Image 1 (cartoon, rainbow, N blue to C red):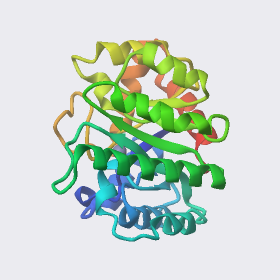
Image 2: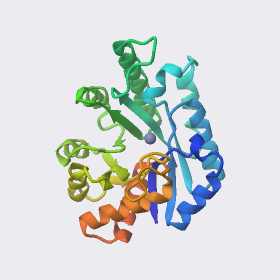
Image 3: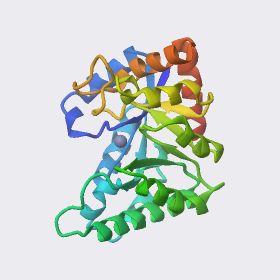
Image 4: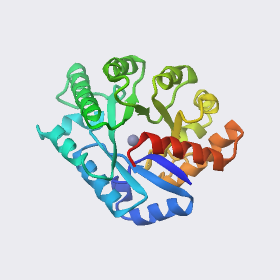
Length: 265
Ligand SMILES: [Zn+2]
């Protein structure tokens, strides 16, 4: 039984066959899915999906790429209100994205500043509510990484974070894990040019990482390029189990246990 710790079940790409997608996951022994939100609409959809499916939990939050689209000044209150729902397992995905350019009408600086404000407010809310956070970080260099560290460090000891879609070396993961945070691996780990990530997945300690799909994106080899679904978490898990020379059962059990401790299930 494996947990897919990060999938976008509210995505339009699943709207016509979501029940089948969830059914296929369960058949493949992916028995728990965390539906991740990117904006307010997504947050209510994820809660709805979780309410309708025992095997699904939701996160709620505003993704850094969605911050300029939030028109509701009361957005943080909406999130606070939604967080009371039993099916809400964490705040996310939140963070910084310096990879995509600022949308038209925004300067690079004003866009990054707004992302920082949203990130900080949601960390404060998570600390207040006692929920952990799912972090998105993407950049072409290390500026975003440094800024994330700066914004999150005052919350040390108050909240734990999972750095989702972790795509760096063990050297970069180590300090995060030492601070009590987690990393999680997508299908990217199975790609041919991913030797640094593979090395990280091989040596990082048990209970420091989770498995995710980030579906509908990032399907693992040999499904690369197809629509990704939660059942693909098993392929990624098998790949990492082979790297670590352990059984798929043991890897599934350990990573699901890690998810059970991290999320409010
Ligand atoms: Zn995601």
